[in-house]
Image (cartoon, rainbow, N blue to C red):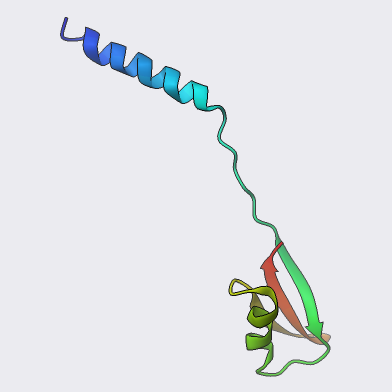
Length: 72
């Protein structure tokens, strides 16, 4: 009798988990967009202003450009 309750509880719990269905995993893709053809200190502030707080401004020096890295 002592084992019956935990086994019954695990059975009910597993049925509840199966009815939820498979978990969906959201994959975040990273996009790089060229903001302008030169790089200065404004690159680091212009990218978040244009694309949102999660965007990061990067300076590329070959060729020189301001690149905004953000989630697509």
